[in-house]
Image (cartoon, rainbow, N blue to C red; front, side, top):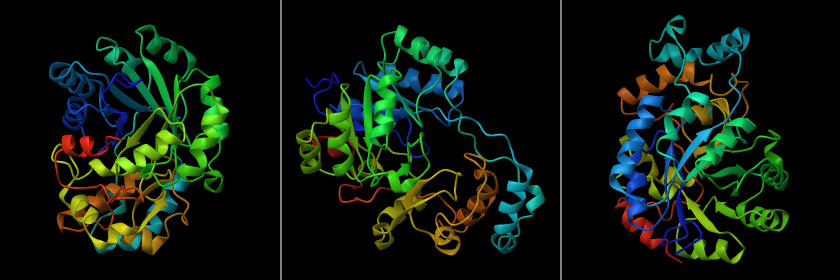
Length: 340
């Protein structure tokens, strides 16, 4: 038994938009730690997912939240962004005036804490720092561990000082949103094998390794560098139990999957995904965009129109730099293949 309370030192990374409780349950049952992403769920949907997990397994699991500060809408920023997207909108016959708000990403708050309290999840993890101290205290009162992502040594020290029970060292290789919160400067962020030993040396709490881990050799390597466990995301994207869209699945299995980049075009916050038309034509980080998550508003209708034509040109195709372990098999098979 690992310190996680699981048979294997393997954590399935929470992947909002690409999974729900089915994947988390399958990983738990296979001996890993399944994770449920909650940033895009309403309190009612979150309760349904947690009911499904509790009904299916008695094994430990993780529930993950964002804890960003919701931005104030900026009309000038929105106008500039829509003007920059105007040629694409015109191509698909979309009236800029018809664009509404994009899909929300709800930060952790008192309402969400109330929604999950009855389920007492054993681990509650966060991205973009930590929520307010009173919310951390509330989570810990039911006996849960609090984890959060760090992309620098400074962030790891900050998390430990502010109540984190474990730190997730997120290397630059990782797919999806960067977890940085002290500084937006990407040049300060390191690859996992440079970052991990520095964080292990800097904090006393357990450290989890994330980014570019795709097989058992990678798991063994991070354990050898002092990690308590490996967190793996991209390897699960093609699993039977994942909710990855058909377009995203096709992209993951295409030669283009070898080229990923960090971009803020889809949400307003840097995240790694497979390079597609939007990223090529605008430049992944070259455009001023509305603050996270407001950039999704103008992208959403473009994404929908393109996907209706079978195109992933405006879809966030999140993926890490190492897709060697990403296979269209069961989550149980992937989990077992990661055993060190």
